[in-house]
Length: 452
Image (cartoon, rainbow, N blue to C red; front, side):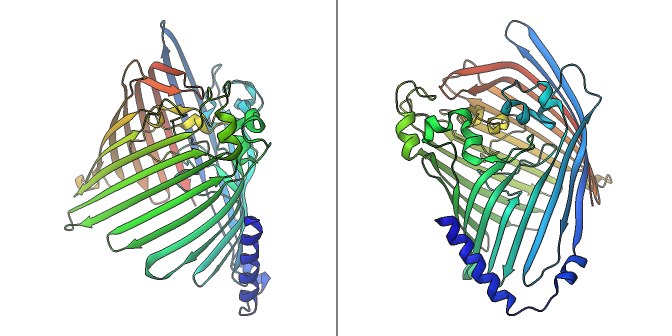
């Protein structure tokens, strides 16, 4: 029903625009623009488990995206984006997180199986867009960026959704938006899968009573002066309702000094069939319906060529419920998020009810970061970021500690980043509440990206 409403709004607006425009279709196609990127990615992951069992996996891949967007024809435009990741020089033990990890998991295999080592190409975007006055719309396949459904562009390819979105821009900086999303393509997958089935996998019908489902996000945002507020309700019938809200304040004291302060909150509850079925004894969550709550705050200070940031997050503990955040669509919203401790693999097919470190019920997280732009010292384009985080939870045997270092260079369309990641006691919680910790994880990445 809501999908028909969105499409009706679009149809009426498009008709109105067609009566007031004279551009030809041929002119729109000729004036189209090509854009994209070529990316090289190297990743090396070393793990040491209990009992001195260690493993090292790495991978090389080259790929990127090629997009074409038409010019506007009666306020309408069309965009298509071709995406590809092609591995080479692979070892015996492959890190498939920049290739086809999700492809392997959907096929019922382990993350590093042969299916995940194969490169793939996919039409990642194919959508129409319409803009007129204070209204805009898109429909089709698209890469989007929201707190709980995100592109996760730090890997080789971004994730994408299929659906439609309409937004109205009102006076005084207020925006109202509504979307209908029915499919999700994870960044290491070549296929768009029903969005709820992607989250729950083979347990979808057992949990929701159906083999498929949708997510309907409704968004309110406002920006005025130094303040910005955003609230999004992601409603998925018979699965989950997730509410995200944040407030951001920015102040520029002088040309040399500025600071930002932000607060965020997240509330999640299972609804309908999922609320009933997850509460039954023997369910995948151990008889617990979903009820998760989280808050976070951060302070950032920019002084000359330096940036400082501190953040705190808390996911509340409730032993009577599945209290970890449910983030199956590449959402990593908490301010204490790190490069690795970020629910990265909980967006794989069927893994949506698990949680990682900062997002686990009962976890308090603290993060500090320092960034330096070396242009002030005569090294234009060079920058560095150092960050560390601690995650404490009485369910964990030991506190997790993450240390990340990034050295980057950017000149015009070219960027290169060297990333080092060192993690001790990496923790995660399975859907049924089982806790596991990995004593040592080290990871190194080289990423070169050219945009055109």
